[in-house]
Length: 600
Image (cartoon, rainbow, N blue to C red; front, side, top):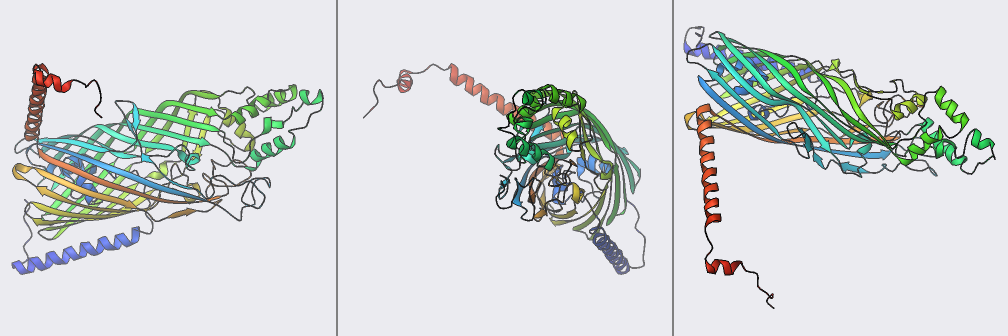
């Protein structure tokens, strides 16, 4: 252990220690007040990795959480005991999102036909609201989704006696989230189902105790990233609505011979109204090899102060997977109309529009994505022996996320037609503008040693959205959050530790007024984004609740526990086989017989 500086008598040392403690607390509060006005964060970013971190709202950079230091700060592995240490935690998150839709009474409607004004046809989602029916996540081995979310993590560390090196292995999920809605939900046009997750299935790490007060660490991780989306398609728009108006107006228009050669009625096959459904879109994509690395430093010059910093590299993802567009009957009639006469066929060829209706298009798509590079730094101070005070700052380069870009293996009819209303992404490419902001978060944590075997933990983090106000939608609508954490740590005999944590990310109701988001409810004349709720005021409340249990013990004890469990299972199977082989007595056989006639 480092030698503490001498300040005369013991009372003088305690006074100076208190002075430095108050100074660090003042700096932490000042930084908190400053960054709270400029911080931006993303919901899916490391909110359910390991139990102790959840209880402290992820304020663990200067006091890393055991084996899962692999993620938070690999230099913290040097604080683990000699020998082999095993850790496992299990987290159950529940995402609750309620979305409300109200018509903008000042909106004049589309083509004076569809909208909230008197005599117009109202939007069927106006006045509706819904809460997601469940969460959803992807299971890598089974290659399927389930309608709930779990967050398991596992880690193992090893250090030889008197060695300065500590090695570790872990798997965990630093990013993840998913929601699912009912088939008739008004939210379905913004995303009936969505999941996105990144699981690090093999993270190997090492730390080195450079000096008695300074350790360094590094982690190399291999991960799988998966994403799935299902949504209903519609495009309330003036130009799209025009096809519906002309279709209705020409329903009975019939000029013998001339109509069949030029513009057969009804025009555009009847067209599409503002609120008519185009079809359903679904994709399921993944990348099974998404590497990353972490670099960490932990400096602990005294027992009452430590400083930590970690750099987490960007994770570049090359998605590949399948997709399907399933088109509505009305959409198919409109496409078929493009090839219904010599004039429409020539026009479709000139404008490169589809003219053969198909009920669906399926195939393979590719996409690129990048989880941003991040830096976390923090301090830990102990004003008294039993109390740890922690403060962290987290920075993420989310501005590297410019757009969603999906490249399909064929021209997509929807995009071919969308060119007529201003879409410039191309026939086989879907582009959604994102332009996220960088994030700077802060968090605070307190850990109090109530007794020798019992610790209390509390945490608070401020997380503000990285999404631009004018680019919000229901797929990537990540609101501001206050992260509250609480938990306990229970120390048992033989270096066994049980951790229990509860977490909640809460945001107030957020309103997105009509015509304020280019990815949600813009009413611009031409296509400037995906706007399924044009003319609608959208309000949303989101919360995430978590319960987590973790266990830490020497690895040898874990193996003995597994042997004991297997022995008990073998005993149970042996008893079952013995009962099955045992012959029935006559009385037992009679008990099993079904009476010929039911009693009255």
